[in-house]
Image (cartoon, rainbow, N blue to C red):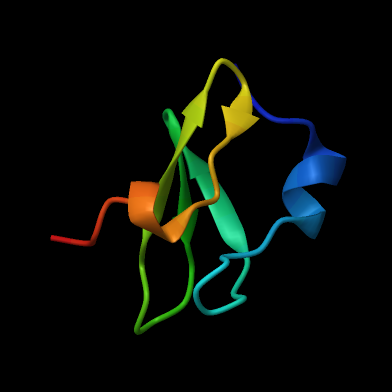
Length: 56
């Protein structure tokens, strides 16, 4: 379920404050040195660094 465009525009990575992009069921940080992927559960982004998936 895609997030509303207005919501995605104001969300930022809690770790580095870079913008996020939506990919499948995650919001991925666009920061070059960060790249954390935050889950979206039941249409709600979980923007907790402890819940984020580290880049491979």
